[in-house]
Image 1: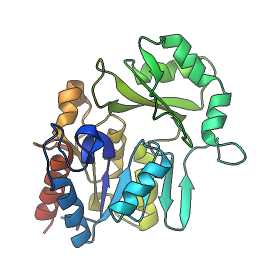
Image 2 (image 1 turned 180 degrees about the vertical axis):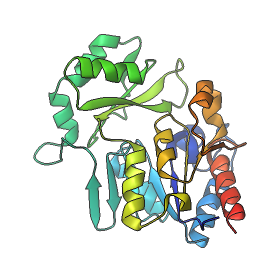
Image 3 (image 1 turned 120 degrees about the horizontal axis):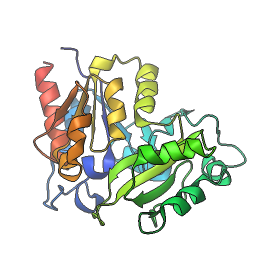
Length: 266
């Protein structure tokens, strides 16, 4: 098998455990396996790329702490390198107004809030502020249905992304990002991989959400951490042929994926 070149890994509910802690698994037990997964990659000269729905400042700091030279933020809105930025937000571009502000000016956020109502859909307070691109919500709706409604009512340049269960689980609600239609974690992974010259089969991705699954087409193997199926059993039917499901959840599941891939590729 091809030597492993890159690991693309989600943060919340994947590398991070309870209360978004890298020091704990999904049940709140202390573990060092997330760190060991990153250490194994660094020792094997495998590039680690964080791909998160979090805003830029948060992912930037996480990447710095973990020794990552590039990262993907706000569900694939941009790939950030040490000396370059690749924005995937067309037809919107950051300028005098941020992409977040430009999306707000379309009226699409208010349309969705009015359409579904506060019992099913609301801003993901307090994490919805200080963002560059995506409007962040939480709720219990169908993202594909919402995207179809957006297109039907003239917001054809936007889509709603399902980025997985929120922690702690509230009424079974999930996190949603309103983003430009071309934005996805999968597309961002392709951009980074091509910029680095990595072959698809030399890369793996690990995640927990339906949006993370968009990275499957961009890599040789996509790993789903076990807790993803606990929170969304219907994901089983959405798994592509190159997907594998870890026996462990959260950070220990990431470690399992890295260990397995490195061992199989010797």
